[in-house]
Length: 253
Ligand SMILES: NC(=O)c1ccc[n+]([C@@H]2O[C@H](COP(=O)([O-])OP(=O)(O)OC[C@H]3O[C@@H](n4cnc5c(N)ncnc54)[C@H](OP(=O)(O)O)[C@@H]3O)[C@@H](O)[C@H]2O)c1
Image (tube, rainbow, N blue to C red; front, side, top):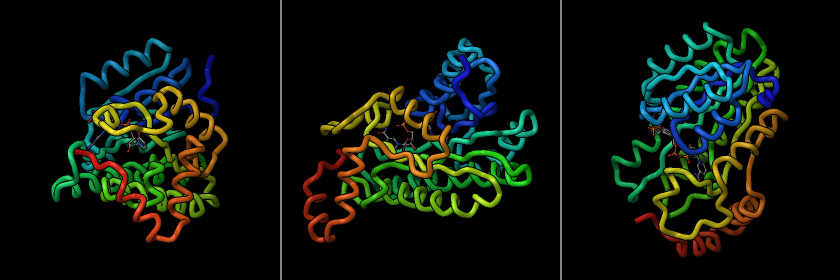
């Protein structure tokens, strides 16, 4: 059964593992073209094979999202092959062992510049057609800076706020824009966390929630709701109260 809804050509960055892999698999179906990217060719090829087995036409490319020219070229090539319906800017990193100076710059380059390098070339093709959907993967961590991950939280805040603004800006062009804000999801990113992760969910479950939200063109796809409520409260409380609480939270080490 084709469950991809209106999307016949879906491009996903960071498709070689975790949420991106689960999204590729959930969208894989006969009649669907998938364009997938990541840096690890072996993992990317395995995901592509799994999607092909589900009947999708799959193309993958080893491409670093920080390489602006390479991303523009790849997205143009894929759009010329089959016009893009849905682009999911999912690739992202967090600091495995704390945010050093270099790590801070790397996090912003991948999580923010990488999303920009994905979204802008896609919009260039979608806007003249007045059709298409963009998803920017942010995080529930975007709602309040945390001492354990300042660069990660702020890179995700920039992605969320940019996406929210783009949604308004693109509405008159007929382009849907959704911001995805997951809580803790099982993936290579969270596998390294040694602290308790409340409401941790599987990447498959997260992909299903994201798929349903994108089909309905929901502006902010944020889940799970108890975590959403928690971060909403943290952002709403007086800064001194939130600051005192967040200082108690575990840091990556
Ligand atoms: N897991 C969570 O709890 C959680 C919660 C909220 C938001 N998110 C967000 O969800 C997205 C996916 O993360 P995940 O949890 O699925 O982690 P993951 O399993 O580590 O997947 C990250 C993906 O991003 C790709 N990637 C990283 N740097 C890249 C680069 N420079 N160029 C191209 N691709 C790159 C990786 O590809 P390679 O491995 O091939 O390099 C991989 O496919 C991220 O944006 C993350 O911030 C995750």
